[in-house]
Length: 260
Image (cartoon, rainbow, N blue to C red; front, side, top):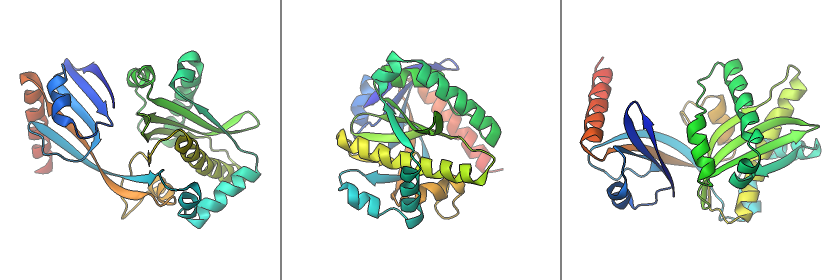
């Protein structure tokens, strides 16, 4: 489990990842106004708001050859092509990120630029990232060639499971470079799974998808790896009076929005 407390708009929030099923004990022992469970089954907790999502998961307890064989043919061919092109893989755990802060600072710059170019919401949270690293739960990976990082990922992990948190790719103008970037990204995911499996991790979470029935480009890319479609619930629980009031307000706001 990874957990830490932060303050937002005057409310203390206890973020909890990889909680298992000890929900009641975690809530009881928390000193925050709200406990924010990331990715749990909906346990029907009182004074809670449930944000229902979907994700894909790859079981790392399988033999590597079986995992690879389940990928789509386009995905497998792209991985092989990236290997032939000389794409290399780098893995930096939390200790390496603490020892060399420049690594995450560079990733953040790339992510900021990537978000700007793509016109997408920038979800990088530097204070949360610092806590993930401090808790030993952050991993940075890179797929590179000739000094260029074609794809980079940040994952959060508790040593048993890992979830993709952020991804950034370097797209160029020429078609060949775009193809190489896509294949480098495929190879990076595969190398992450291989390496994490060697460390004893059991599950690889693809970081959520928007819609498996009408997938966007990112969803379609992730679905190439044929992970298991799984519910992923983020649950906010009010611990004390202030937290319960906040949960009540959120519920009222959602109810009003849905009735418009």
